Image (cartoon, rainbow, N blue to C red; front, top):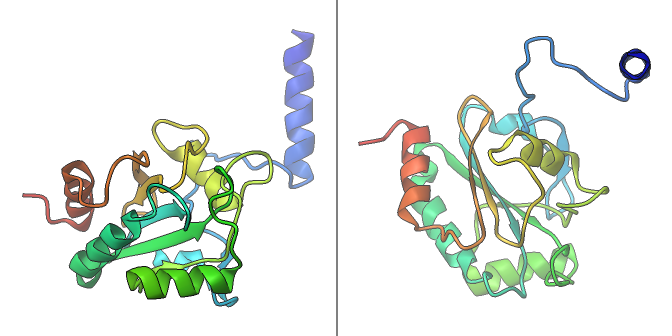
Length: 189
C-alpha cells in the first residue's frame, strides 16, 4: 500500500514538473506533433500532415532492404494524389548502415532511387535517445515495442492515429500494406 501511494506521489510530482503527461480521455496522443528537421535542414511541423494518410519509415542507404526505396517511391507516386505522404527518417541504429551526412543521404536517395517523398534529417529510432516521434510511434502501435531493423513502417490514418505497423520484410508493394493504405485512404474495395 505504501508503494502505491509513493507511486502516485511521484507521478503527481512528474506531472506538475511537466515531465509526464497523462491523458484524461485515455486516448494516445497522435505521433504527428512537434517539429522535425527535414533533410535540407528546414524545420517541419508534423501537424501539417494531419488529415493525410502517413507512412513513416526508418531508412538506411547500406542495408539489404535499401532497394525498398524504389518501392516506396512507386507507392508514393501511386497514392500521393489521393492523400498519402511518405516520411523517410534515416537512422544509423542498425549495423551502422546509414553512416552518411544528410547531404550524402539526400544525394543518394535522389540519384539512385529518384526519391521525391519527404525525407528528414538522420535521427535515432531506438533506445533511450530515440526521437520523440519514434517514442510515440513505438508506444502507440500494435504491437508496441522498439523498432527491430531498418525499413520498418508505421501507417497513420487521417485521424492521426497509428493504424498499422509493418516489419522490414514487408515490401512496399505487399498486398497487406497496400490494402491497409487503401482502406485508410477510404478506397477499400
